[in-house]
Image 1: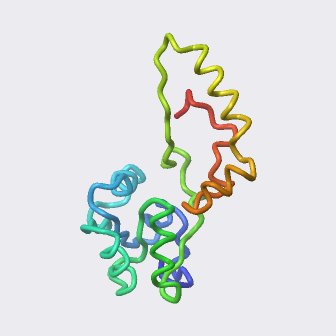
Image 2: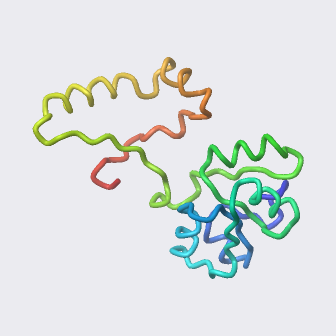
Amino acid sequence: MRKGNPKHIQTYQDIKKTGATMATVSGLVNADAAFKEGIAEHKVMQVPGLTEVLAAVKAARADAGAGNEFAMKDLVKSAPDDIEVTDSAALPEWTFDWVAIAFKPEDKDFLKAYNKAQAKYLGTPEMLETVGKFQYMANQLPSDTKTDWI
């Protein structure tokens, strides 16, 4: 988003309503999400990489750039006077990225032990300190989201 967010874009629906153009890296899920949210194909600029997303927004060829939260935060670090990141929590829940770990059906005891250990660790100061260097924050913890939905 250009600094100051002149079109007040927070979500894909805002892009659609304002007729804005969105830039994203070709092959990322963001283009498919935009199409699913009803954004016209000609309003989604698919470019080769993040550098081109940044260039499109800075040059006002796109009103917004889309990518994962970590990548977008890194782009802002490279051009803090030109662009800003919106709150990803405003996006529809179905667009959130989730990480999964699979277990064999016969490993029920191990799964139970894993879930118990994970519940004790997730969100602790130790965990947040460890993953903080990767820009992971407490608001990205899974909260009460259930694996059945994911």
